[in-house]
Image (cartoon, rainbow, N blue to C red):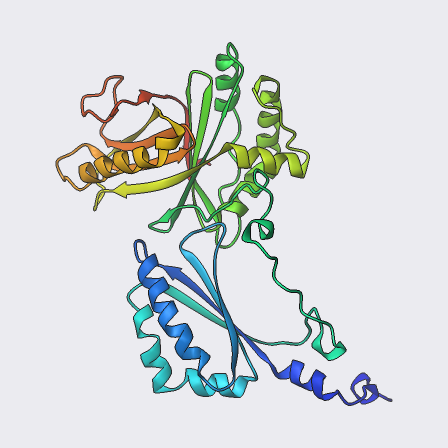
Length: 357
């Protein structure tokens, strides 16, 4: 019997070269506050690696769903020069600057079997687009235009939208009364907490996840119980949306995105805490500076072991700024600790943690 391997013609030199090239994938989890140190270390290392015999190219990428997750891919002429280099003392010394800024790494190695375009067929590689703006999705259609804030292994993000005046009580009842989706999204992503607040006709939903935020948002949006609630509040929204249409859903979540810009926490965080939120009326142009100012005040309080503030996250985009605070002990209707800082206390609609979310 003639086997398939026996029937194959001998590979051309170009095919043989393609089948021996190596792709190395390195997954990294960068420590909180060490991003600039990591980037500086990579900038130094990449020039050194470029001079290693057998090295072709490399890329550094940041996860769109988790700002602490990074990916380095490199291409080599074959596995031999890579293995010779990676097992050398020179390699160990070269990567030392990464040790102080990376929590965990995973290395994967693959032989390149097929690719598009195919150099064996003389296909030309596509040239990069001329401008960075054209290389990105159109404004308003990408629900995660930048990697979300990740601190302590937790990704924080919020969405906000407004409902028609007079419908606030109906919307609050709908948003408070639904069955929570399954917390575990996949092997690496899990829903930790969902906190939903209203002030006037503005709704703010803050979420915390481990893993990839995009995967978590898609998981939640696909749950029947969540879809039913979202469809029920559609008639009361000031801006129309159709979550059954992919383009409309992306556009809505892009408009509604309220990114976390700063997070501070006490160390260690002890005792019972209560979550509260404040909405701050701001001018869009002053938004970033006001977010930094408030975040600085909150961070100072978190470092004070005698202060009631245990954790604070500042969310800001345009003229919307929201602070979500964890306060030690019960939080009454007043502001005994002076945490409002000019903000308006939002009404808690629901706060669900992973054991019931």
